[in-house]
Length: 467
Image (cartoon, rainbow, N blue to C red; front, side, top):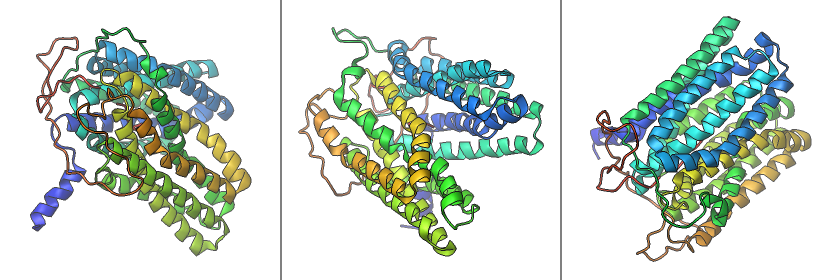
């Protein structure tokens, strides 16, 4: 391979291809930049500028998270019925509007109301966006597409955090409010970008079956429970690890920002490559198996750092960070594959709503669990989390085998023999081609049937990684 060919191959893994994937990636850049701003300034704004206690801020956000989880499945079902393209646009613009309410929240109850609206809007946006992507990207290309979205999301959050850091430096109430209004505007811009994405026809349920069929799907319920357990790897890095470093290791706290930089760089550069082979359900199950094992190993390394001298603790933490980010990327790849493939056609919105709810659940309970187990019991707490995530990963093939009893799931072909999910092994896949974006300026205001590249009808709708 010539140097030019290698450069093109590397560029193909870093730059989203022209078309739908690039449009959604740019939208995701704006959306996650808004997240970065909110994450960096909101808590300090409410506690220092407004005077709401940290306990009440945490309670308001917890109540909002609970409301968001309750809204996820109904919002996804609504996207299936009314069409996910327009639902995504409306949900994202509404999210932008209610986010601006943060800038004017002056009491606990006001903050609680705004948090409920914002986090409900997040759930609706993620569910409808997932259904939309499933409708405009062919099944075998969805994992790769989401890999680009996640890589861009890491850049967006970093950019938003930098912008928020400027506001923290000046530390003025007017500056904080301006940044929160900017975040709302970025959400709205992200929503308007979806007008460049082809419309997807709404689902017309002609069969006598329950509306929320996902609530009766036991294999999918098992999948989302396992996902909630594996999702814990994120808060372990962002919540438990910095406290562990400061309170239980000899390593300098300055090592933690370096760990976050390593994580961001690795995801941006390697997520697309790591996702190869997870396009089909058997590959997704293998990715989850490996994720469980790798994340368990990272927990062991983090635990070891607690009893080592400075240089060895730093080495263990850096090694654990590298192992963690590999497990994180494997988990994401497998989650996208299973979240799509285990859902039946025509119901992706509600299924991805439940998938998103499991992500929110895992992210919500982990900080408390980590404080009790890791900070309270030390290295043994890390081993408990490692064992849980290892078990969750190893159970993935069993969930896929159980799901094969229903051949209507989008990950199975009615004409193919069911493929056996191996316990070990590797899979490779060629980089997928992604359909080009098409202007929809001449489309009607409502979602009408359309055809995507490759001649496939755009009728099978996922949600992603919370990004």
